[in-house]
Length: 307
Image (tube, rainbow, N blue to C red):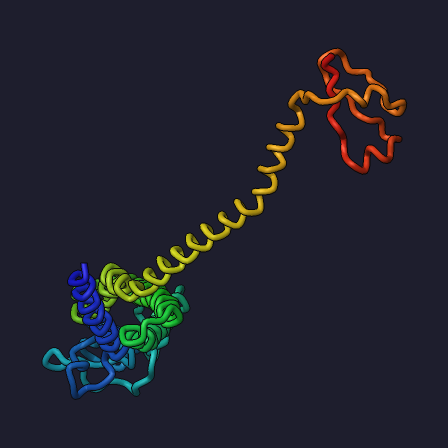
């Protein structure tokens, strides 16, 4: 069992780092023209048929601008702007010959693509922030660190899923409209899509291994709970002994009552007492009346009426 927990913790750590890396690449798609990022883009189409396009050739949309294509790489990109929107109606200098969907639903493409990028960035931030309580809890097991980690990780899942889904929806719809307009060679950036959806998969799949690794961290807590249960049981036994001691007089009283109800043989002087009324049948018991104060002080006295 300990081996399984150690393996789970190791895999969870690797997947957590992998999720952060793939989200970084997704956010930085097209961020530079001098590294591996120059090969990443969301959508590519032939812009030569649109007069308002800034390039009279094939062009690509990235997270930071609109780029021309040379040797399969991004080049001559527009001024880099974070969360560059996918909205041909606004990206081009004019909307001449553009598919009507880009003009009629310009706000959909604009906000969906930008919000998708922003949500993915927030998801990345929560993944990075969750690493601090995660590694602290490995060395200093604490319920506070566990709670902080799960809160941040769940938020990371939500923002990552929403962000990648929105970006994919915007570019997928755009590709369909370009193809419907005759640009059949419009394609997704397969590398960017693969990296983005790998992040989506990793952040969900890692839940299994994170659960296994956190089970190891709560082992000491289980021991404490067992110790507390033992203390409770010992205290319960002690209290039960006290209850038995307190109930001892009750047991003696019950014996007295048993003795009291026995027929008692003795002298029959009570029959000569004028303050006593003997109304009991033969063989029974009779008691002094309430107004016989001297007798009441001494308690009820059993009277033998056996003749």
